[in-house]
Length: 311
Image (cartoon, rainbow, N blue to C red; front, side):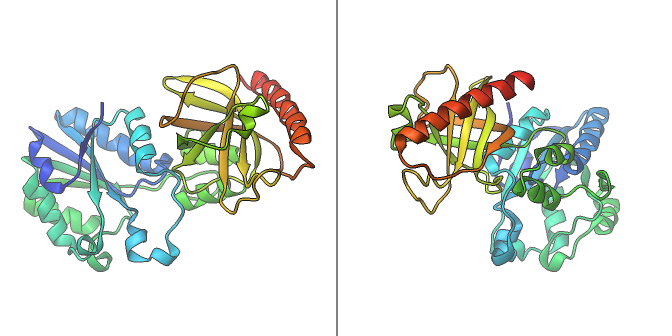
């Protein structure tokens, strides 16, 4: 179970030495995981508690909101992914304009003063922090010598031909290249959403769907996909439509509907995680509900075939 902290002062609640891994960690890709793994190894050697520290909202939302990136995983999804990596403590620090004005030195002093014993800090070696990006790994190491903690900068992780980054993953997802995203993330790209009430048209056609309010912001291209959906602790096969529902709605906003095969339960309000297995077709407008119903049946058959092959 992951223990959530929300302020730096709460670090004082942790007995014994603390190892901090600090960064934005959007997507928790292989480069982020390298920082986490090295910090985990240090904590195990030192008999310390590893606390991963990240920021909410994404700092770019505050510093340059007009050019802030779409999120690969919103906070609730990030928590789930981190817990799967074995994290036990997460410090989710609120990032606002006042926090953004904190000098790098003052930030480090706060961390050291709040921990009963600050053993070490791990960051990506190019990470910058504090007002006017005044802090870096060299500042951490110099202040560590004074405040009696160690600081480690973790080298970037290379993909096939360039450094792994959240930007590369966003680009891969945006073009629907799930294989590339998987290579950079070290896992399948998934989206997390809360099931909300829809118009129930699909149910009337015999294909009940879970309508998801998707937390992720970076989505693949609109279309129909063979998917697997995590409901509770079990993965289920299904077919999903991501798009504007031109036959029935002509909606401006994207909708995401998942028909889970051979499954009947009330999912309203529940979290569902969806993994894209294959793009089946583009979204298109049909002449009416009968033609749409026939196409959904074909989509289900194709999705079942794909998912059987990809077990």
